[in-house]
Length: 314
Image (cartoon, rainbow, N blue to C red):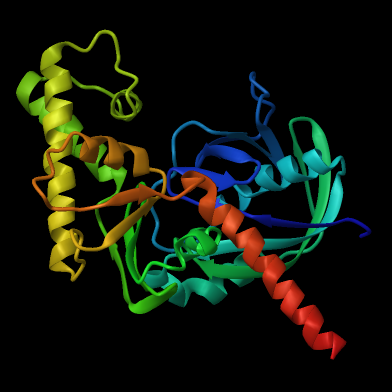
């Protein structure tokens, strides 16, 4: 094909993120055209209404077609932005450092030719010619490497929906052996809050209602009792999470802490209340935090292509 594009896609357990936008990691599948055609994907004889309920967590996202299907809207968005409907694609994806043994599986899973699909009533044809897989969190950090390269030590903390991924950075270089993935994602916090509200009040509230409240968009019908449960449960959760980081060798008070990921603003809002009892010192949110990994993949691809071109030019 004449058209070539580079795109990075961050396949989160709650959201799919790219430089073109963020959408839910979920869809409704049907064999016939659904009544609502917004964000509608047609692929391999089936219709997929993108969004809605997230898919269940899976350690290995290559076990079925789910995350490949969820990648197609991001490709469509990029092609639409470029004003084209067909292209050869170099795709950047990522996995946590602690799961990096899945790298080749990810590459094999996404590399495909002759992909034909329709998104929002427009037909697309792409070949994913090459897939490069990078470590999550570090890719986002590398996007702003120049800003932080002069800092001797920092903790890079990526707050996802299912896991908290952490790695130590020393003089601009990640310490690979320090990488950990802990089961302290934002979905665990939301489930903990749901359980506590149910226990104390008997009221059932949804994940979405709690998430909105945690983001500062308080539901009008919540009384002070429920708001207080959400606040105190969140403070306890964040403090327990920080304690586990310290137990895993992360010095949080004497070291700069660089925060990123989908849950970063929930964490920072809680820390700003000053209830962490000196568990953590200076924190800073990585610029473009939620899409930093995806944009970082694109930059790393371009760097890899430049190095490759220089090698061929010798």
